[in-house]
Every structure is written in structure tokens, then in C-alpha cells.
Amino acid sequence: MQELNGKKAVIYARQSFGHEENSASIEQQISNCRNWCDKNGITVVGVFEDKNTSSELYDDSIEGHAYAATDAEWLKWDKEQRTKGRKKYKKHLAAAFELLPNVDFFVTNERTRLYRNPSPLAKLDLYFLSKLKENSVALVEVESNKIDFIDNDIDIAMHRFLATYEMKKLTERKEQSIKVVRAKKEKGITFSNAFGTIWDSKEKLLTFDPEKAEAVKYVFNSVVAGKTYAEILHTLNSKYIHLASGKCFYESSIYNIVKNIAYTGMRKNEVGNIIQCINVSNAPISYMQWKKANEIVADRKEKSGRQKYNVKGKAKRHFLPLSGYLKCGHCGSKLVMVNDRGIVYFCKKTILLHDKKCTASRIRIEQGDNNLLLTLQALFAIKFIEHENNKLNYNSPDKEKLVTERDNLKNQMNLLFDQLTKFNLNEDIFKSKFAENAERLKVLEEKILEAEVAEKNNDDAEKQVLFDKLRKINFTDELLDDDSYSSLLRETVKEIVVFDDRLKIVLVDGVSFELPRIPLKRKAKGVPFSSAVMFIAPDASGKQTNYHNAINFYASTEEGAKPRGLVKNRLYRVLVWQ
Image 1 (cartoon, rainbow, N blue to C red):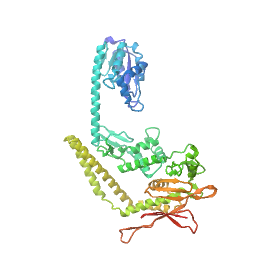
Image 2: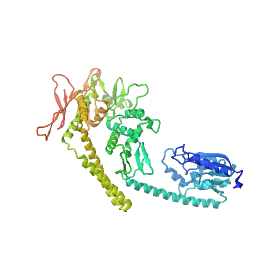
Image 3: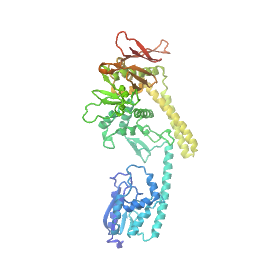
Image 4: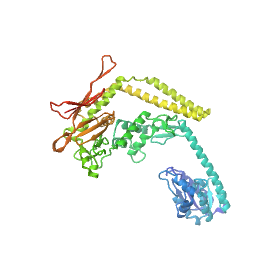
């Protein structure tokens, strides 16, 4: 091709959106184009590249913007794009086009680096080819070693026809690909790019990075244990910081991990049903853990009891387990915390609307010897009473039989997949049978988890931990550790409504009662002291259980104080001494 000697060219390379900027693809494209130019004695006057840019975009110029505004199909396609960070125009392509009057060739690795219509009716290819024709510039595709001189409108029309055909075929392939992916998902094959996932494209298996899986387990275990987000983040950013995809872990990182069901080895199908995935080998958590953690996160969001890190300069991070539980007795708003020589909760309407009636709901957590956290701690005895009652009256299921039944059910589901793919099983029958088996599998997983919990309850070490906590609750003179307190509070108390002269306490089991606020010096008001007396034992026959459980609140410690019954049921009593 001797006649090309002495000609000039501009090189353009583009990397598809979603690829890393440091990928070698652009370097390879430019290298190929330079080699072609050197081989044919062509002088390169400019090299331009657009990184992470879609092929369906116009150039970033006044002309490119104007032409895009008249392309109805392109505008329709542009409105459907929802990917954050997607560029609207090709910036460096516009710079390459500025050199068209001074060059003979526009060199690119292959035509799709320059354009690919977003739909067969869009005019993107017409625009680009017309610009080259106007400047008498030939389009060079290095990969196929083709030179297109675009001499007349017939050439453009032919290119238009070929581009339309190619785009139509591409659209059909995309639609078919979507159908294949959906079919695989229905069969229980999952794809995920969640934190810690590893996709084996050859074997079509989804596995989890062992170290990242530990971080995932920590997040789920911590949420279920009742740890605050601040505590979880502190550990993640001190112990697992090297695993973070960005500079560090954020509160949103916790939400993203907790809500992703892929960590259970399951997924939700298009109608919202949960199905077992057949290509996940080492799921780090169980479905029940995922379900419990999501319930807790949803509950926390509803209560808005989020605890943040302290601002710089504060040495101590306050333990705030009551955030989201306390409500104003006048307007019903949630009380907010302020540090006023100790932790105080008050209604914002006192300040925002100058509502004096809301002032009465102001409550100090520690008032002299009175401590609201210690007072409420006695109520946690209810959880231990329920626990013992369930253990005495619960017939532990045969875990081995349940596991066998679960495994057999999974085998049946795998056979269904084979019948669908190999023997053309009716799709409606497949979906019906699969949904039925998936529901049964869910029930079995829950029963297996119950059996595991029952086994744990009989563990001596677990019993000792339980009794240590029980001892503190009985005497109510020492707070439980933060994790235990937070988790037991969530499982016991639903809300606390603060009035001027009393507290209305609503429990998770539906029971509610009122405690008096005790007048102290200088208009201050405290809360009653409390204690829990628990004694649970079966009777002589072993068939029934005798309960001797009382939760006492002492509004008066004088010798003549008498008990007044607030709650009495078969499991426990709540008394206030006045």
C-alpha cells in the first residue's frame, strides 16, 4: 500500500463503560493502530481515548449535542439509562473530530469503538459517517484491515443498512441472553457481585472469599447480638479495613451486606419467592440468620435509634440503648438525646414549637441514685422466664430426620431441573412443583434451626452464661454488658411513653403498665428501684410447671409500703410498692 505513504491520521480508542480505567484494552487498541500506521508510512497527528464510555454516545461538541437533541430514538434510549456515573457524551472523540480537516484517515481498532446505535432507528452512525465524508476522511478498521473511503451517499446508505442489521441481531442476542439468564435463575443458578463473592465463569459456581466471609459473619452475628452500628463499624474499620473496597466501611456497607440474601446460598425469584441456589458451595450464613438480621435492621430504622461516632474531641462514646424507645406523653413524638451534665431525653417540640406541655416529658437517665437503665433491666427477667418455659415444654425435634428430609427435598428439586432442561417438563408444572418444594424447604430449615437452638440450650457453658446474666437481673444493682442489654431490651420492651408524673411501659408481648415518677429535690423526678425474683420448677408429676416470678418496682422504700398489682399472668407478675 505504497500510495498511503506521507498521509496523516488521527487514532481513536474507546473502552466500554464499567471496565476499570487501568485496563490494558485501550493500550492494546492504540498499539494496534500505531503499528498499522507505521507499517503503511502514515504520520499520526493525534491520539485520543475515551475511558469507561458507552459506544452509543455522541461526541461532546456543539454539533454533537444538537444532533443528539434531534435523534428521538437516542433520546428515548438515554432516558432509560439508570447507571450512576454514566457519561453523557464522548469528550475526547470531539477533540479527535476537530482534527478531521487536517488528516486523511480516522484510525480505530474496529468500528464499534467509534459507534454502535442504541436502536436500529437511531441516527448515530449516519452522523459519524457524514462527518468523515464531509472532511474526505477514510475510516480505517485495523482489526479487519479495512479502509472505507466513504465516497458518496450510497456508501453511507449501505453502511446504514449493515449497521441496522447488525443492531437488530445484537438486540435479538441480548433478549435471548436475558431469557437464558432468567431460566437459569429459575433453576436456582445465581449470579452475584456482592462483597466477598467469587464467580467462577468456567464452572458457573459462586463461592465466597474466606477472609471476607469472616467479615460478613461478623456483621450478621453483631446485628443479631444487638450491637450498635458504631460498634460494628469500629471493628470493621480496625480489623477488616484492608478488605474494604473504598477507603473504609460505612453504615451503608452494613445495610448492603445485611440485605443481600446471596450470603445464604439462596435468592429471590421474580415473584419474590425464596429459592435454594444450586451453584453456591460455601454460603457463610444461614437463611434464619439473614431473616433475623433484616428484621432487626428494619426495626432499628423504624425506631430511628441510630448511634453515631462521637465528634472529634470527645473521649467517651455514650451507651444509648433507649434511643428510639422513649416517646412524649403529650404529642407522641420520639424523644431525642442531649448531653446536659448527663444523658437527658426531651421532646424537640419544646424548642421547635415552644410547646410547654411537651416539657413534662423531659427525663434524665441518671437522677441521683435513680437509674432508668437499671430500673428497666428487671423486666428482662420476662425473657428468661419465657426461655425456661419454652425449654421445659418443648419437645426437641429429631434433627437427623429433618436434615435427611431436607437433603431428599433438595435432590427432588435437582431432578425437577433435569426434567425441565433435558425432558421438556411443562414450565407451569415445574414452577408449581418448585414453589411447593421451596416452601417446604423453608419450613424444614426453620425446624432444623430450632433443633440447633434446642441443642445449644442444653449446653452447660450456655447455661452458665445465662445464669450469670440472671444473677445481675435479680439484684439489679449492676448493668449487663452493652450487647446483652441492647438485645434483651429489644426483645422485651416495645416503647416507653413519658408523662409528667408517670411512665407507660409497653412490652413486646402486648402487656402494658404504668410506673410513677418519684418527685426528688429541685423539681427533679426519678424512677422506682426494681428487682426481679424468679423461681421456675416442675411440680411433682413433672407434667406442669410452677412459676414464682415477680418483678418489683419500689416507688417507696418505707416499711409500710404495700404492693399493688399491675400485671398478673401465668408466667409472671409486675408489682409496684407504694
